[in-house]
Length: 264
Image (cartoon, rainbow, N blue to C red; front, side):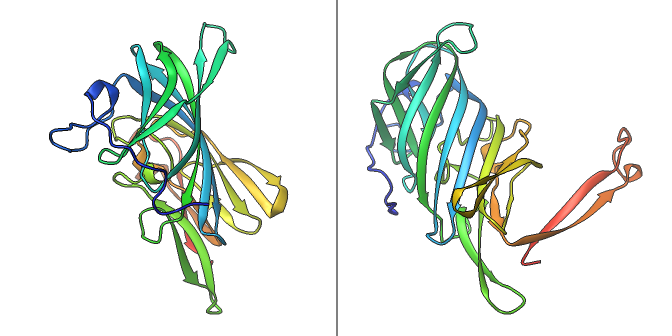
């Protein structure tokens, strides 16, 4: 289903306002500032046996001026399958209008994907939804596949992420620049018997068909995309705490610390 080449690329030139690249220089450009992320609702589903992943993300964005498209980072290796936007047309909480993207153009130099919805997007808060998938990387970057040997010498699979500095875009379409901080509400699928980790404590778990457990994590504080992480594997942990007396002078409670290792 997925290929290393990802979706077809289309070079694009233009101004900073439309998220293009400088045609004369061919150098990557920064994301336009007319759209900023507020919250990512992100679902990540790795398949360890096929060494692939699929996912979906809803990005609550704040549009600061009238624009023609939404520009995100997405590496060429990431297959973007579909996109839509829920336009908030009034102050009513559920008064929205949903539009599917009519085109998705790639800029391979800047690793942009420009989502065009066929009509101007007015200032305000809207929700961009994207479905995507790809191959787990064979390098220790992006969302990658790895193995280790357990106590009996058997090879066991593991998937983890390393997004610093600009590899979050290889796993999820996003605003992949450090200054564009947002909160993250993450859920991760894991096979029954394995462990899923992310940046925040587990909020709840839900059994799904096929021996899969969906793990939902608490919402993170605002952070950059390169700090986002997912790990799925046979993991075990040791817990400890840092006493309040060893923390900052205004700390009133101990700080819990947990260290995770593969294979126990």
